[in-house]
Length: 284
Image (cartoon, rainbow, N blue to C red; front, side, top):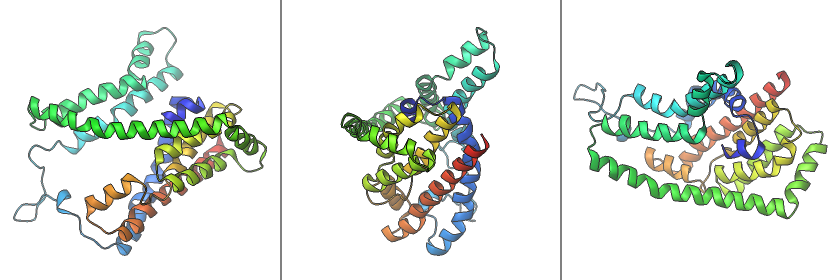
């Protein structure tokens, strides 16, 4: 969302192309890559993800929401924002359907609605009482402060590049270069990701640098520029990335095993994604 705002890309086009590119990317970085990762890192699933009875049969944990309910909750904001994009394309201006979908598809409202739904589907349905839900929501607030600080730091770093003229210089260089702006956007995001370890900082900073370039691109290519930056921002998660340690601790593996599995999976995700972005740019 930060990159879409900075690059003034169309939300609907970005989501649509993003879903199109995500499907083959998930296949490559998911089931295909996991076959190699299983050979490099032969570890069993941790107890956290297992729930078997005395006969070894897995079932639904009491108090844990069903997968379908969880998936519906997580995907709700995407569905609402896609609905807004489709309404902008197909619905007539001034109609009630378009007004409703435009309202529901506003990013902030879609996320707020999803949060309220999650309190019910992941809280009430799971057997939590009012105090437990209040404690859960309260416990979720402190980590958000860290995310906000990270976003602010990335925005501040971006503004330093803008005020010093470095962003404009880099943007002009990319525009005049024979190399695809999409590939350059990916490379800029990769460099910042490797230097800082933060996907958020890489996204916000790279979007700030590429802002002058996006102004000269058609809407479809501006959306692809957002996706290229997103792909570069997840390249090779390492020890400076909080997600790296989250994966390591959840699965109970060593640093080396995390690099061989999680870090390389993120790299496959990034490279496959940008290759598909470049392919789509030729078509559109």
